[in-house]
Image (cartoon, rainbow, N blue to C red; front, side):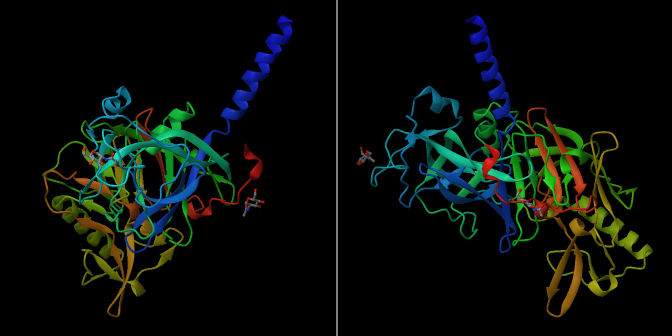
Length: 422
Ligand SMILES: *[C@@H]1O[C@H](CO)[C@@H](O)[C@H](O)[C@H]1NC(C)=O
Ligand SMILES: *[C@@H]1O[C@H](CO)[C@@H](O)[C@H](O)[C@H]1NC(C)=O
C-alpha cells in the first residue's frame, strides 16, 4: 500500500518536472515601419482573442483599450481598498459615468499608466484581471497556448492613440516591476524572472521574445543563441522600472572615445521606444568625431548629413560585409570587465534614400543636454539582430552582439506550430 502511495507521488513529481520543462512561452515581435516601434500579439479573455500590443520595455504594467465590446467569462475588477489593490502600487479609485462593464465601474482599483519613451504620456485605467494566453515553446517552435490566469492590466475606455501604432490596442509593459508581462508570466509558472528579446528590423519577418527560460533559443540553421551571451550587471535605480546597464567607455575601432565631462560609469537605458541610440551632446560629438576620423583613415569621406543624422556617407563608397556596411566598429564597453557590446555596420548605420541621395548614416542621435535624460539611451535599431537576455532575478543582462556574426538573424526563428509540445 505505502509502496503504491510512494510510486503515485513519484509519478506526480516526475510528471510535474516534465511539465515544468515546457513552461517557457514566446511571442513573435514585429517592427512597425511607420513608427519604428515593435508590436506583439497576446491572447486575452475567455475565449481567447488576439490583441496586438506595443512593446514598451520600460513600462511598469500593461494598458489595454477595452472600449470596444470587451466580453469575457473570466474577468474581474479589483475593489478599491482591497489588499490586492494596495499591493499594486500607486492607484486611485475609479468613478465611471458611462455604461457599467469592464473598465467602467465605481470604486474599483485604477492605475495610472506612463509610457517609457522620451515623450511621456499618462493614461488612467481601471485595473482588471483576466486570462492571458501565449504559445508555449521548447525553444525551437511555438506550441499550443498556455494560459496565465488572473493577469493584471489597466483597462482604458478611451481609444489607445498614444502609441500611434496602427492596429495596436494597448501597450505591453515589460519593465522591472511585479506587474510586467514577464513578471506575471514567470510568477504564474513559478519560473525564474527572466526574458529574452531578439528584435528583427524587417516588418515582414518577425523577431521573437521568450519568457521564463534561459534557453535554448534555436535559430535557423540550428544555432542556439543562449550559448553566445556575455553578461553585465543590471543597474537598479529607484523610482524607475526601466532597464539600465553601466558603460565604462565607448570605443571606435577599438580606441577609447575621450569624454571630458563624464567620469565613471555612464548609465545606459535600454529602450524599445527609442528608434536610434541617443547620446548626450558631448558624448555624441566625441563619438561622431572619432567615427569620422576612423572612416577617413579607411578612405571613407563623409557627405552633407541627412537629418536627423549627423554623419553620412555616399552609399556607393561603402562596401558590404555579412554584418552590414563596412564602417568602423563601435564598442559599448560594459561594467563587467572587458565585456564589450560590439556594434557593426548593420546596427550602427541607417540607409537613407532622400531627394536623390542614397546614403548610409550613423544611426546615433544627439539628444541635447537634458539633465533628466540618461546620458545614453540604447535604441531599437541597435538592438535588432542581437539577442538580449534580461535576467531580472539575477540582476544581469546577457547580450550576444550581432547574431549575423554567428550566422543567423532574429527573423530565423521557426514559427511553425508544434501541436504536441504540451
Ligand atoms: C457611479 O456613480 C455615479 C454617481 O454616484 C453614478 O451616476 C454612475 O452611474 C455610477 N456608475 C456606475 C458604472 O455604476
Ligand atoms: C520548422 O519546424 C517544423 C516543425 O517542427 C519542421 O518540420 C521544419 O522542418 C522546420 N523548418 C526549418 C526550416 O527548420
